[in-house]
Image 1 (tube, one colour):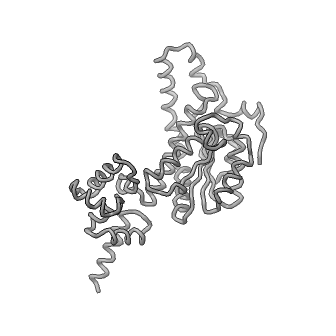
Image 2 (cartoon, one colour):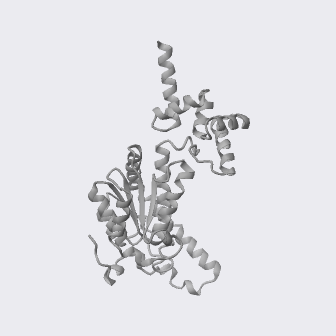
Image 3 (tube, one colour):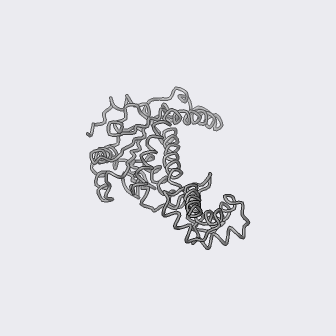
Length: 315
């Protein structure tokens, strides 16, 4: 339900309060300004830490969605929307996933990524229309991102997703965030008043970015996009990433550069498959077969191979 934003509403929001620690910031030197900003930023990770159990619960649902063919959507306005789009756009090259698997929606569309379109967040139905155009369903996950928690564009989309039966999360920096009413997972980042009153691109934005990093990174780890701490499913789309692929193959298998290069090419430039090929001494076809029979992790593929070998030996 859309609730009008009034002066009384704004007065009750933490993000709209004046920060007593920075009340004379306009009289400080450059270094003093930076020091006080740095001091305020130091509080952000602690605010995130308090929400780790909620974030973990959301990640668990995202993993379940991914394994069932679902997608993760971020939706936000202004800085929050841009952060969601940024996190989503970095998933394909980092983890080798389809561009549709994690998507970011921002009030005002692509133009809002580079130019402020502040009134776009007031359209309660636009977020709903965008989800419908993307065939959002109950097997998908929607995470609303809004520092104040009052953007109608975000709230409308979240309520639509909730009514469909989808998992809905909310990331907000106000305890009275309207987004929490539609969220199964309410992530309240209590970063306090901003250095500059109401400028939520500062501590609020930093906190949101940390949480978004956690959601996608932890989810990708859980579905097997990481082996040890190596991003083995990266997409080598340029020379740097090609060399990084060979390097991580070496790190994962302790092989030579030449062996890594050979396996990399034989695998169809799939670092993950190349690692399995070297670790198990199998060809690309066998590695692909193991991948298709597993849920993704290299460790599972290795166990599956040894289990088959053991069964064959017993017969």
